[in-house]
Image (cartoon, rainbow over all chains, first blue to last red; front, side, top):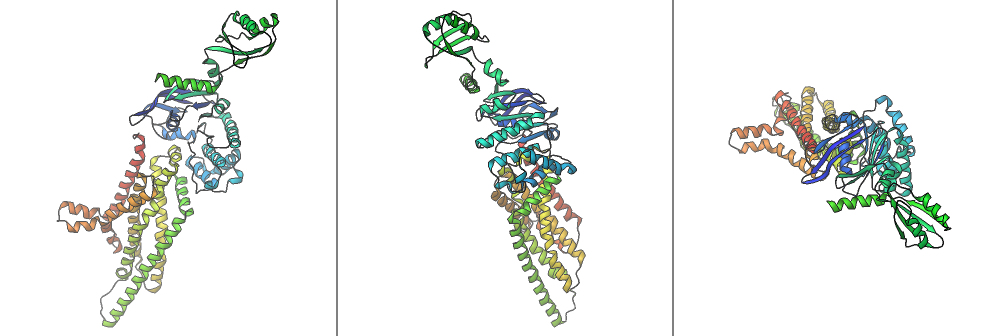
Length: 310
Length: 253
């Protein structure tokens, strides 16, 4: 679907993107995560053929974005950062323009505009000037123009930025709707959004990918230990001693809130053994949970590690 | 390309600036026309008085000064129309949409230019009313009038190419207007400048490059291929410069 090979982009002496390579598979939603200035927008601008890379290449549906730029662009719907729109046009005339410019056949334009207006919940504002719309509606218009020619690939640069919680929810819902039959790349720095919407996440920092995987693999794959918290009645020291004897357990510590924190070997799950042993020793178990690192923690860890080594 | 052209036209006709400029343009053109008519009637009176039998062509007395005046007016108003063409897209960020839609840069420049030219042509066509009034009062040499309109359109087209080029250089519409006005003026007076230079090759080149000098043959009702070709070449040259500016994003950082 989308293949990115050895992508570099220099802005003068500053290298914005360093040797980026990854694939996005058909029907996949790839999230782009990274702090501001990490190179997310630059990468998206190159994928959408807004600008060429300094070196490396991008192909979308088999079309090189530099050599076959018009064909590649025909496959992409793009919602740029800040969602630039023609404020002096009415929603419908803007979509008519977008449909024509993006090669929708004249006979299908009217039907297609209607479909997109409906899909994006814009029917009631079709005749209004874009400049007078609320931010949530503007974002929908941006999405509508991206969808107008029914492209197989969508590139969305921070689609929910600056919206209120209700609008964010609606836009996410909309993205989920349209993601069913499309390949999507979306960038964000809202982490729950990425883990909710995306099949895979690429974490990018200082122009390079530091991790790319499924959200659940990211959250489990990067821990050094399996971490378990538990709450027991009666004698904590005795419980700690018993747990310490279980194979695979590396460390047992008292947590500040009175519970116990157990570190076990990575990829092991000693929870059933812990419970059995404690019950055998007549110690009550009130609570036992395996704690996964949140995407936030992973993100912070990757970003700061990268910062330390750079 | 057609949709981009139509979008440009729509934006022109929804903005108040078009109507304001058109209004001022037609008022001033009207003043030029009535001046020329008054002069014509004075001439006619003199001719009757002295019974001179020199044939005085209507085209010389009315058409030429009117079109001369209109050409100066066009010089002032083209920057007002051309300034937004690319600068506005860049300032609003909508250029990012255009550059990622499946359009070639050539199509982009062409649609922008043609839309601007259409608006100018509509404006100039309004002055046809004056020619109608003229025809009502006395016989008119329509060949000469058409030739004058053709020259005026070609000249406006050259101005517009300069204006579009200026608009591609900046994101600020005021700067775009100022630069295009400056460029237009430079090429307008260039021909006159050559008169002050010794008659070398340089002065000849200056005389030929001036925009104003190529208009008078059209106003005299003489269609000269050389002058038409000059305007077309001038226009194409600045359109290709505009294209290069747009394409420079590919190699600039």
